[in-house]
Image: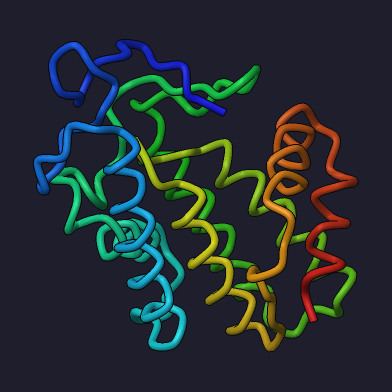
Length: 195
């Protein structure tokens, strides 16, 4: 599903919707292929050897930077345009830093969910996932950043999750429902995939 942008060609090559990138790729399919290869390789490294595990908003942005810095000048920086997907409008860009600080501050207050029994842990993870998804701080790469961050966070709390066989379509539909206040399927997704 595509994004609906405030200005569709912002940060794109003239007369295209292809994001300006460090590789100079102007074909969207070729860019996606390169982006997928680069980010999946870096994601595997970040999962096996995480950045410092403070789990704050700075760390979240650092994960995005690591994943996308070979591709985009703005890697690790919050977006400057309004962004929506299907019927979901994400946080306005001028509020991202403030809300991001609050979201990650709450995570710290809850000791990163360490020591929670599985049912409570799953409920908190689903709520945080939805909250960060609604924040949607980056121009591109929010989902990939979330997957790396959540894998690290889940492992830090003594659990594990395997994204290799998960149903991305189900997660996307669950995320859309959660954005409308229906959390059941998102909770179910994490309950079924966290061990």
